[in-house]
Length: 406
Image 1 (cartoon, rainbow, N blue to C red):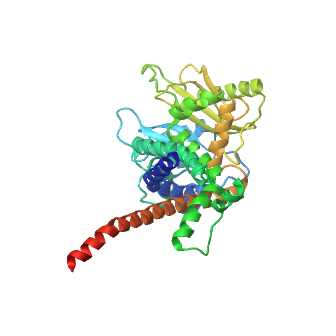
Image 2 (cartoon, rainbow, N blue to C red):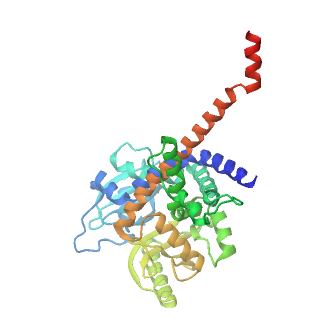
Image 3 (tube, helix red, strand yellow):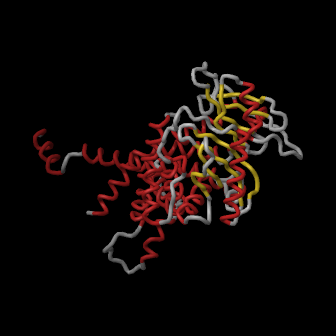
């Protein structure tokens, strides 16, 4: 009885998730090579930086605000190779900017492009940001993010249900050992019928990829349903929720934030203090953000605590006006739960183990599509068979009809 209920649960949750997983699998396959594809589609946004570190975050922010006098910069990110990405919004009471991201040459401050990041693309430069937005929110804002978060949570639970259903049924009488009876679940009988091949691909594919399916499902909960993720992780590990997921507390409007130069200087000072206190090395600057709705600055670097091939997640958060330290975020070596989360996040983003793993993640996205499609096909074939049986008259009724016709 319990197994039959789990079969129904797996069937209907799989059908409910299939469309979402096909979308995130396809977009995720592309995002494993986001930088390369974006560079190919929009080379005009990338500037060569031979032998120079270029302008710092404060100088870039000032340059962007000079180019768009009605706007104010919120983020300066130069962690990507030769790409400076900056978000902007219009000043209070000013006319809309007509864009929300601007790209500058880090050497000269010259403008390279503007776009609405994540909007439906009207130029090649908007293609990959739109793919990213679809992957994260279905291009539907908070509603899409919630839908994907709930899908990820169901996906996580279904990983365990699906694994259980591959095991030999309990109480089965057989002279074969447990492993011998479980072995067919790992194999694909290519000489079988089309339905049998689909069934084997679905079952064996889920088994061989089970660990990665769980990793990607649970890390998706972290990214889209962080409140639930944080509560669960805190029950098991030492874990602190990232500051940007914390509830918004609007600062007083009459207090001016630090200037970009002072914020940059304060961020570097605090990061140096944290490096000495926690014993890590700072490798390079990555970003300077002002989160106006939370009243804080974030200064981010790549450090020896980062595990990713590129970029970094080592940050200090400090009060936007006073510069007082609010929080420090170390990707590894500080809290066990945060270290595990960093690994989950970097594995999901294909930012570890080099090119080989990125190729795997790109193919993995296609394999998620395969598992979804084969699952829907198996359901459709079984449903068709049940309907066909339902249309056939019972033997007794068939004889009655024959006698009545005589």
